[in-house]
Image (tube, rainbow, N blue to C red; front, top):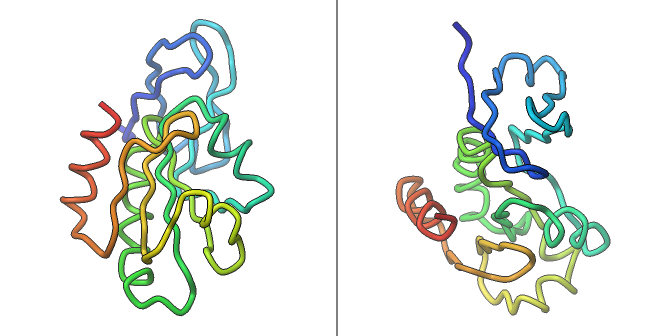
Length: 148
């Protein structure tokens, strides 16, 4: 039996059971009620200043934005944790990565002063901010609390 993920439809709100092995093979699930395509990201999506509005602000689910830089050691330390959480929380929370050096407008807009910074957003509004390389359990706890 393949592992399944319960994913809420962004259009009608019904919870759908999605087999992750089919998603990994490239198939796109659809809602059982309204037939809307359900986007399931098993890894973080890369966002830029230009794509931030479409990929984060208008996204129907909460989004955790990992603001990082290539020279940042702690950013590289938590990268595997962010990958794991993106896969584990697929369909409930979207994870995105924003390179602070290449995208200064969004970094300035959200007043990011330290790296790594995880911005927990809903509808473009910040509902929590996690600064520093915290353990996976703490990041998970904070994200679940903020998105409950």
